[in-house]
Length: 77
Image 1 (cartoon, rainbow, N blue to C red):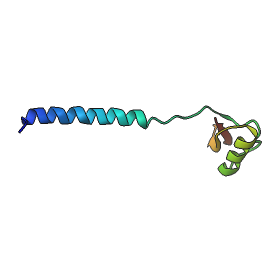
Image 2 (cartoon, helix red, strand yellow; image 1 turned 30 degrees about the horizontal axis):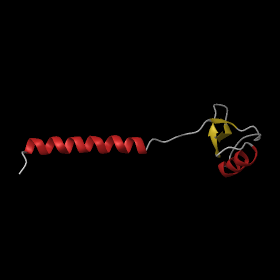
Image 3 (cartoon, rainbow, N blue to C red; image 1 turned 45 degrees about the vertical axis):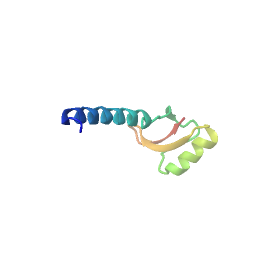
């Protein structure tokens, strides 16, 4: 049977490896976010904003966000 200290070291190395590998896999990638060039006015409907961004701005998606003055449509590329 292995010594307890060796088992603990092996377990710690395996745990560190799993955590580092998981961090690499789970890193979110967020695209560039800009104001929509086609949306006018206050944005209350994120689904409509998203459709507008995909159709006219060629973005991946869109959503309503606060911009300091109110809610605006932002496109995410």
